[in-house]
Amino acid sequence: MDVSIYFEKIGIDKIIDKEQVHPNQLVNFIGINTLDSGFPELDAVDIALIGVNEGRVSINNSGSANSPDIVRKYLYSLFRPDHSLRIADLGNINPGNSINDTYFAVRDVVGTLLKKNIVPVIIGGGQDLTYANYLAYESIGKIINIVTVDNAFDLGSTDSPLTSRTYLNKVITHQPSYLFNFSNIGFQTYFVDNEAIELMKKLYFDVYRLGIVQNDIEEVEPMVRNADMISVDVSSVRMSDAPGNGNSTPNGFYGEELCRIMRYAGLSDKLSSIGIYEINPEMDRNGQTSHLAAQAIWYFIDGFYNRKMDFPVKDKKFYVKYRVVIKAIQNEIVFYKSKKSDRWWMEVPCPTKLKSKYDRHYLVPCSYRDYQTAMREEIPDRWWQAYQKLM
Image 1 (cartoon, rainbow, N blue to C red):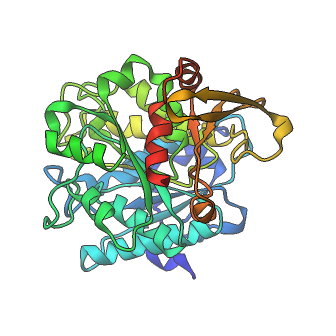
Image 2: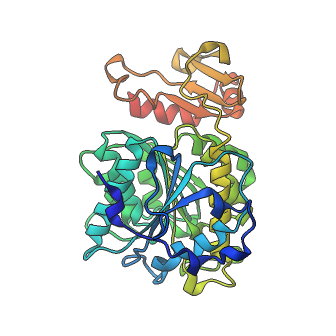
Image 3: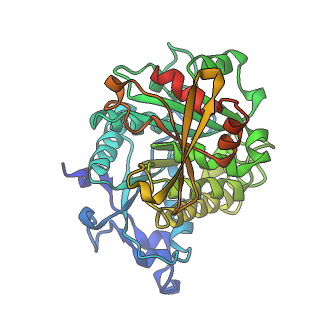
C-alpha cells in the first residue's frame, strides 16, 4: 500500500538552517520527505525514521506529541557515521480523529516497512504507541520478542483503558497472541508492585532491575539481541541527564548507558523495529533530552551498519560449537560462538511439531557467563525460561 498518505511533510527550513550545515552532517545523508524532494523511494532504504505526534494518553506528560521535530533538529546536525547510509525520514504521522486512528496508521506503516525489510525507528509521542507497533507484527503473522527499557512495566489492570501506563497489559492479553517473550531492562523496584513481578515470573518473562543492569552493562547485549522490537521510555534515564519528561526521577540510566543499549540494538541482526518515547520538549532544559534521544538514534544507526549477520546460525564453519552436559536435566546444552563477532547462543530443546512455529526462538542469545554457568553444571536462567515456554 502507499504509506505516504499517512505522513505530513517536514518543513526542513523550520528545523535546521541549511546554510550553516556542514557537508558531512546527517541531514545531507537522509532522504527527507519535504515539499521539494517528495516522499522517499523505499526500495533503496534500510532504516526509516517516523515521527508520531500523538500524546493524548501519555500520562502526566502532556507535550510529548511535540517531540519529533525537536529530536530531528539535533539528529540532523550530528555528523554521519563512517558508513554508506540508506536512511529515509518519512515525516510525521499526525493524530487521527480518535487515538485508534493513530494506532491504525502506525500499524499499517510499520507493517508495510517490515514486509520490505526496512527497520522503522519511531520517534514518539507516548509509549502507548508500542501497542500499535506490536500490532504490525500481527499483520505479518510473526511471533516476536519485545524488550522495553523502562523504570516500570506499564501493566495496569485488565479493564484499564489503553494508556502509556497500561499498554503492556493490552499486548499480553491481545488475541491471537504473537508475543513469545517480554523483557524489561532497568525497572526500579519501588515503582513496581510485587504482584507484577510475580506475574512476570509466572509467565517466564525476563525482568532486570536497574542496579543489576548497571553493575554489568555488557550483560544487556544478549537481552537486546533477543528482541524483535524495542520500546524505550526516556523516563528510564535519570532526571539530571533527561529532564524533559513529566515522569523523570532522580535515579535511572545515565545518558551514555542508554546510547550503549541503543548501539547493542542496532548491532542485533534480529531486531526489526524500535521506538523512543515520552520526550517532552515543554519540560526540557536547553533541549537536553531531545539531544540525548538524537544521539541514542545515532548510536542505533552506527550499530545497524556494523551488523555481522551471524544470526541465525547457518554455515557451521563460522561457529565454534560447545556441548555441556548438565546432570540435573539429564541432557546437554549446546552453545555456539560466532567466529565473526565472538557472540554466543545456546540451543534450547524444542518439540519437532513446534520447530517451524518457533524457528527463531529456540536458539537463544547468551553470553560467555551463561557458558561458564553451564560448566558449573548449573542451568542458565535464559535457557530455563525459554525451555519452559517451548515445553
